[in-house]
Image (cartoon, rainbow over all chains, first blue to last red; front, side):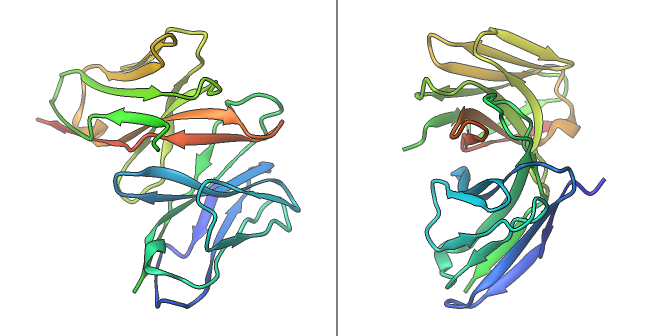
Length: 116
Length: 115
């Protein structure tokens, strides 16, 4: 039972570097998303996708890019890392709502990113 | 602006006691209210959830109370155990397209259950 798998678990980047956080799910979920978690702020939605080839912005999309070429994978790209992007990143997936807001959203175990 | 306000920020409860975490929301478009439990180094995991047409939902030692008119909901953990020590997030969900929903999270409550 892999569920939602994220790599890497930990990463240190220098300001200005780019990198990709990988996310894969094996539950055939249509919906995938990326959240960031910061102290005192809960989790905030970065980008989401309702299916292969379809992505959209969440509430904090600036500095991040996503693509969805397959149902299973949803990578998150940091284009030019900034210290403000130091955070814990969670990938999540669920079945599509089909007009129903309440399908369980499953989270990966997180990727700890530090930008120095 | 925090759309889902959660309190307290931290909570210490003795073993066997009742833990209570409160949340309030503004957006009446929210139609599903889950609680997530997160242990250190792990991702959040769904604990229990409620729809706004129900005033209370109970699963084992965990109960959600929901007050639609006040736009408030709370998590009660009865007979709290040391294994319940974790961070708890309330959330509210709404459809953002016909098939996708978005979770808006509270800021989290760090619960410590002491012996």
